[in-house]
Picture 1 (spheres, rainbow, N blue to C red):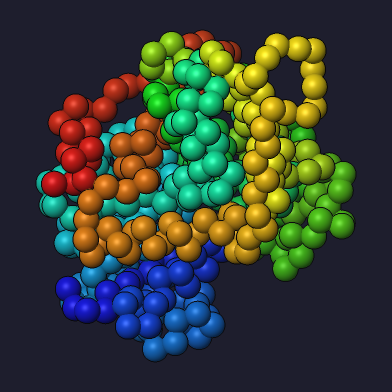
Picture 2 (cartoon, rainbow, N blue to C red; picture 1 turned 90 degrees about the vertical axis):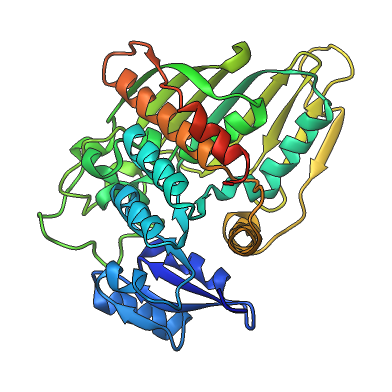
Length: 391
């Protein structure tokens, strides 16, 4: 490894702008971009990574001696295979969430990381979002006592645009949106509660987008695929993906270790977009109002009363710039530090696997009329390896 980390980017699609946070003069630089779409790769180089080389085969990128670390920013169903290839090539690997779309895929990646000794990092950027970190600090201080329950309502106001016009709408590419979209939230639930899901029961359905206008197979998304002014109400959406077999509405009940109970609700046709968390302890509760810049976290913990909108304590988050409340640069900084120095990180491959496992089993329950499903535990030896900081 040289003084300047060489970074390779696999995937030049929608989220590939995240790789700009890996460009730090004198410290790290993107030296190669790979995508099966050569035009997309060249565009990424031209606009964001001048001087980087373009590849259409990810294996050519992995063969480069000047690539120390790899960012995988590709569709979900490719994560497991690409991550294993990169780990076996001796590269440090950043996987854009989710880690994989099956429990078996996750475990295969974790085993590859242990067997090769290559460093693995999973991009659960919500652990770096100010609203989540502030809630965790409140919980860790004991301001609401011991956590007993976590409730999450996820209003995916732009769901018709982002999740029902391309591969996200297909089970074979995502398993479900309870995995693809909820992997972040399930990870946050686990982080706040200090425990992983052990058992789930879920219901859901394709309520709105199942009968919408779909474009012909083989036809790309039109340039106006994202147009909030025209795409309301939700049934006015057009040019949806030719195949839609995931749910647009779901509710999940979860039993976590230690007896903590949680609930998660996801809707892809609301007029607004935001997440609402409620964390209930045995000495109080907290709730966020908004989840972006300027969000407020309210805490009630001093006395019992009828409902009162004025909380006992309020934490107003400052304005921030950048996507995900400024979390993406912090996420990338942690990854690059981990590549250089190793050690523990706020994100966790084990936690990433457990959020996928909860999402997979919730999906199985949903498609079995709510029949409860147990979440398979992870091999204790793998848990120990990653808890030691991958040493």
